[in-house]
Amino acid sequence: MGTYIARRLLWVPVLLFLVSFITFVLGQFGPGDPVQILLGQYSDPAAVQRIREQRGLDENVAVQYYRYISGVVQGDFGESYQYRGRSVGELLAKRIPVSAQLNLAALIISVGLGIPIGLFSALKQGSIWDTTSVAATLLAQSLPVFFTAPVLLLVFALKLDILPTHGWGGFFDSRIILPALVIGIPGVAIITRLTRASTLEVVHQDYVRTARAKGLGERAVITRHILRNALIPVVTTLGFALAGLASGSFIVELYFGIPGVGLLAIESLFARDYPIIMAVVIIGTTLFVLANLLIDLAYPFLDPRIRLGGGNIGG
Image (cartoon, rainbow, N blue to C red; front, top):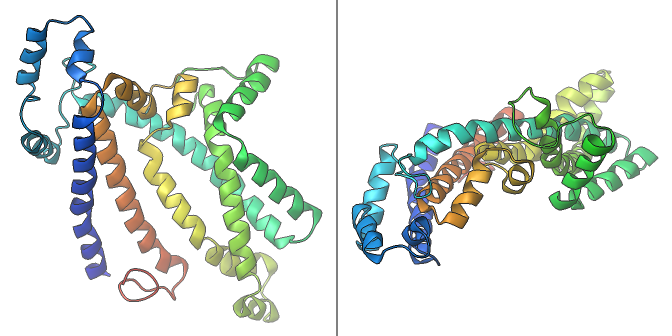
């Protein structure tokens, strides 16, 4: 396992280099000059040139990228174009916990509802409960944020007047409920369908029938033999969901006025604030690569038949 982990970790800097370099080049040759946007439409050309020289934006792409990535290795993502005098790390340090709390609340909703509903639906295959849950999850998964957010606001904020409409007050504040529901509802549908499909594959296996033939209680059969093996595809989804905790939910944060990474990224895109965009991409890529590794490491604990570095996973 140690060799497998080392081999996977060696790929992390390679992937980060490719992703960061492509993003950096696209930012350099993309539309709009960040300095021009920063100073306004009628800015002095001399002032524009002076700022470009101060920030090293007049040098070639290779030199700029080398300087930037050298700072990133030391934990310095540079200074924001949009927020003068403030480092990107300082801005993200305040925004990442907000997005992480919001997405964690949404993940709790998705997992807390998705796994039980999917398991119940599979165990009741062919019944009215199974048909209803499948239809409901298909409907929930097909609804876009632009529909669910206004509907939830209309029902719970305007009609019932029991939940606030926007803002942020932390994980235990009532203002997190609506945006967490908007993000979590599609997740419930996805996890429900994954759990159901995986459970249907497991429930008819020989070891499940053997466990029942030996007189093992139904609850023990479900928890020890069915659910544990059925969770393997779900773990993959959960791993990437955990990796996305810090990346923010762009549309939801903008819609509900939540000061997270998603809202900051949208503002940075319009302002051509490339240091922030680069930092979000690099952090997000790193988390997804590490999440992929953690997912692989979790498989043998769920199914001992899986072996890393020469079995069903890896190579």
